[in-house]
Length: 407
Image (tube, rainbow, N blue to C red; front, side, top):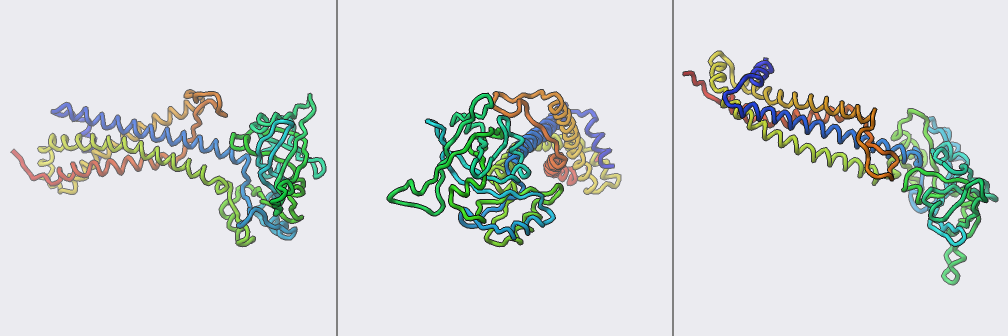
C-alpha cells in the first residue's frame, strides 16, 4: 500500500516542475553511482583473479618454513607423517638462498631455488617454461631454469641451435664466515642452462631454479636439512583447515603458510584498494542523498493537502511516515535497478567483446578483465538502500508531524 502511494506521487504531475526534475536527477545520480561501483568492483575482481592465477603458478598451496632461522630439519619419518595426511597431495623439499649468477662477463643476483623432482607437481612453473625444458638435472650435472628477466640480464642461452650456457653459481656456505679470507665463506659451482620461464616480473627478474641436492651440497646442508617444504593439496581441500592441521602436527618450530600468507602485502594491498575505491564511489550516493532530501522536502510541501486528507481519514503519523519513506526508497530502487542493468550490459560486452582496452603493451592481457560477484551486487544495493532510508527519514518525519489543516 505504501509503495502504491509512493508510486502515484512519483509519476503524478507536480505544480512545481522543479520537483520532477530533482527527482529524476536523483534517480540518474543513483544509477550512475551504482553502475560505477559494480563496474569498478568487477574490474578489481578481474585483476585480483588474474594476479591470483599468476602468483598461484609459482606459490604452492602450503609452504612450511622454519619459525626461527633459515633452515630446519625434516626427518624421513616426519616427511612420511605429513604425506599421510588426507589433505596432502604432493610435497616438494626446497633449499633456497640468494646467489650470484655469472655468465662470462655478465653477472646478476638471483634467488636460487633448489627443488626436487616433485616440484613440477606442486606448482605450474614447468608449464610456464617457454624456452628449453624444465630440467633440474642431478647432483653432479645440475640444470638451471631461469626467469625471463634473468635471461636478459645474464645473456643466458638455452636455444637448441647453439650450445647452452654453462653458468657459475656462487653461494654462501652455511655457518662459515672467515674474516681473514672471505672467499672461504663462499662456494662456487657450475650449472647448465636448460630452460626459461615467464610468469610475472616479480618472479621473472628474481628466481632461478635448480637441483636441490646441488644447492644443499654447495651450502653445506646436512642430509635432512632444508629451507622449506612446499605442498600441493588435494582438490576441494579447505586451505585454512589444512594449514591448522599441519601446524598442530609439526609444532612451534615450523611456520605453516598458505599461498596468500606467502605474499600478504600484495593481497592486503589489493583488498585495501578495492574497498578504498568503493568508499570513494559511495560519496556519489551521498550527493544523490542531498538531492533526495530536496526532492522529498519539496514533495511534502506539495502534498500538504493530501497529507491532511489522509490524516482526516484515519491515517496516523506512522502511516504518513512510511509513505514518504517508501517514496525515497522507490527513487533509490529505480536508480539501483537501472544501474545494475547498465553495469550488467557493460560487463557482458566487455567479457565477450573486450571493448575497453588497456593502454600500453607491457601487460599480459590487452583489455580490462571483469569478474562479476553476487556479493558485490548485494553490498552495493544495501548501501544505496541504507543511504536512501536515512535521506528520506527527515522529510518523512516532517510530513508525519504535519497538523491536520483542511480548508
